[in-house]
Image (cartoon, rainbow, N blue to C red; front, side, top):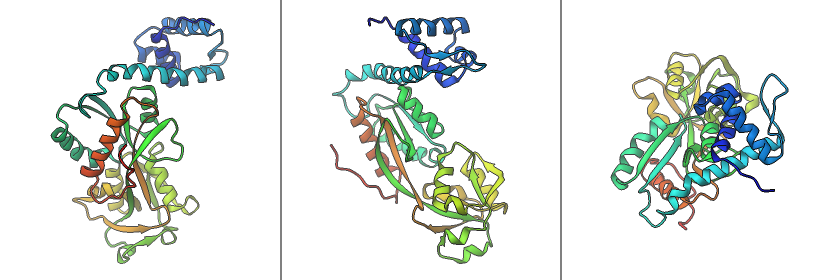
Length: 308
């Protein structure tokens, strides 16, 4: 089957899949809904398969459409990297690099990262985007981001990773809390403590739930936060306790919140740098990972593989 595919139409298809509706996708792409609909119909004609189920009130991708979206993301990412082929022999970290960073890392690591990269790699044009893990990985997959600084999740697929360090948890409690008399706390000692967590979508929320044991959690469902700084303020106000990763210990500066080492089988998260499998600039990303380990994560241990 010979097909004549317009790359712009492939971008429209990916945008439609990510937006969930023709109206939202058309707005994101800067086109009219009729133009978007005609582009999708054109792809369906070329593929000789339907991509979208239009029978319901809400647009839904058909299985063939889902497969084409996955493939389109890969194709578009490859095209984004084409200019990098010409520069494969240039100095490492000397071109543009678009880095995504999760919110539980960005405010605590970026100041050191930006200053050290500016010092060691002055030719690097770094673009930073803060976002939740799922959205960052989607953008890595589609080529809109080059790499993402995240915490490892069991469901990571389609990416290569370099481990940056083990980030142990500390228990954050209000001043005068009975637990402050202990040198460390265990999961059993927290069974009846009201727990404060980040809101849905934050991977730190999932890591904290695993570290504390899901069955033993007594979560304060009426109190949630979108940032670690807010969680610390809520803890200081006596609204509950929370787990704070080591890299975020500066979040308690200027407060009376106490930090206690937490002892449990999974009392740490693993920070990683992730990029798309088969990326042309994988060597650049490994250099970046080594730089982060050395200059931006003091005191964190990492299983560092030998340099290729």
